[in-house]
Image (tube, rainbow, N blue to C red; front, side, top):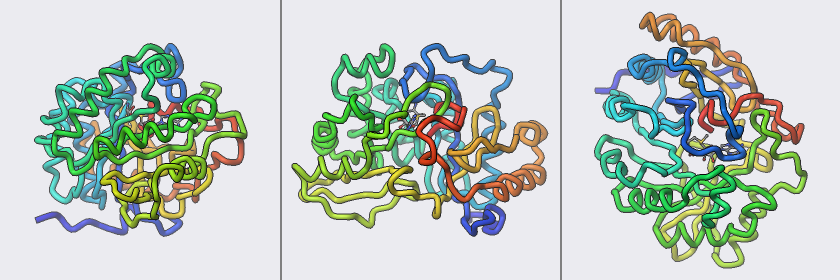
Length: 332
Ligand code: SAM
């Protein structure tokens, strides 16, 4: 029997309750996507990173406090040594309804089936372009073929759902919206387009002509009949049914369809910092409590983070980054 959650424990001052924890297990990644990381990132020294046991302890205590969905992310979670040890134990947590994963797909070909068997219910795979040269440019030398093989493996592994995530970049992949939707439909995968957010000191998203959710819907409507969908996964994506297709089209639009009013998310970095909002610098350090395995202290610190959760992000108020933290740190 699942333990009774203390549902008030993760309520913030705006009346929202956190039920979804995004757990970044590493800051390392085998790609260097230009919107996510600098060309030469300074990855954290190993001794600053929580052990997998400490991550598990925090997750376990947060599930007791009311977390119902955990997304393992990064960095690239599949470059984290022994991540399967953690995934298996997270999947078995009493009270957790769903364990899901976000990956760049480069290592998925050999692992998709094993991940599903471990209890990962759904996977999101990043795919911003279908053109190998563009992919290499965007990721600073990534191999698109590996990602496509990973996507194919995921689509046949029997997950409850596979979703492709494409970050919208005006002047870069604006001409691939339909190709990406077609690619997803051919595999029965969902696809979500994400409005690019200015994160970290990497000088992107300064243009006011940025691609938005409306641009995606207009492009999609050239080929597909769209119907707003009631489908929801407890995250920020808003979905549309594509007539005659199993695949759904999602938009994640922090700028043009602000979703902060029902934000249910908390983000834990691999160093144990709990961020109540992706769009602010505020954080509460959980590493000490995790190292001491002090559940009461952890719960008290979680309450501090929730009390400080802002009403919303401020991405739209300035085109330049104000959040000086790379997306790879908090896992998106
Ligand atoms: N390595 C994994 C991956 O590539 O999916 C997980 C980590 S990545 C930080 C998680 C998600 O954040 C990806 O879908 C990525 O495209 C998205 N992302 C990264 N930087 C972003 C930005 N500046 N704006 C919008 N989405 C971003």
